Image (cartoon, helix red, strand yellow):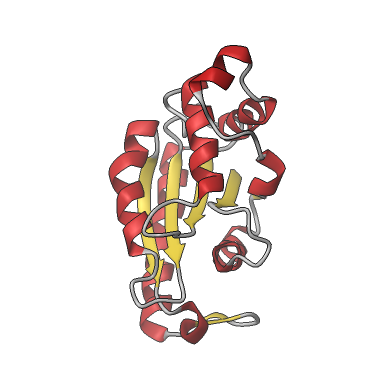
Length: 183
């Protein structure tokens, strides 16, 4: 299986990137591609710019999604919504292919230093990502990242770790059931 992973931020200090890297430890037998949104920067979306040319990075991002079997995404929350970097990428890509996520199975996550764990952006994504072709198989929120995550050990809160492992297994099972290479 080929797993495509990215955090919905362009921050080099992203705690959502750390959560994704922890999640990817569960896919050691799979091909993993971790994307950094800094590599997909584009001008801010506008209809005026779209009339001139669509950025190549939007096409490249869509090609990465097309070539994968499943997506792991962890969204950073800025002012209760997506980061500008992610929203801009989504806007450009959706103008090329309205089904940005191309019906790929997705494990959707969010974390924050607050007690709601990125819950606002996670809830927004759970509502709208399916309209953009996301087949969300599982979702997970990790609150108070600094208290519940250790750089070396990962998730330290036993209850949240149990929930995380259950959600990872749901996602992994969905990948197995959608694998058609045997046909």
